[in-house]
Image (tube, rainbow, N blue to C red; front, side, top):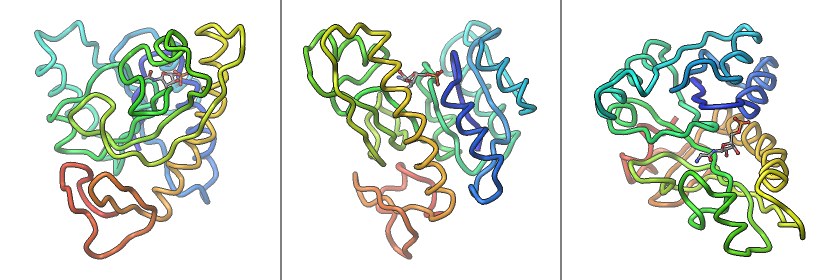
Length: 211
Ligand code: GAR
């Protein structure tokens, strides 16, 4: 897999650690980012993982940037792209070539977008959580693979709540990506199941193939 990040990269590091065990069933072939000089890229390099940066600001528009990102990802020939704290929208240039999953720090379809934790707190929900889903060309709208609930505590601010979500999120991400790699998956409309079947990818835009 290629893991895409924009910041700290704690989820990416959890995947890199898990993938050190050959029994995990997947390997991180590269880590990519849209920003130079992030902690996540430093962490990837320190872990001995190949890293690349395609800075958003270096391109005329998001189409050009998406095309460059697609090239950079494809150079590593991944079977799966994992967006783990990646704060840009991946367009058709990437998604027509690669199957991608994304983690989001809320229980989708509630609170999509770049400020999910802040938005959940502002709304006053008592339970929020994290979602892993296949990427489609919408914003946080693809078929859901797994979700875990996280309670909001009295006195939480964005940072305390996000840290609690991230602890749960790392475990969910590692478990889910490992199962996808080992068991394969089936997408039937909006419904995702682990395991392979002959006929079951009914929406080719959701995943490229039934692995
Ligand atoms: C994670 O909580 C992830 O869900 C979120 O960014 C954080 C990255 O943390 N992603 C989004 O908000 C995407 N819309 P990390 O860099 O420490 O893994």
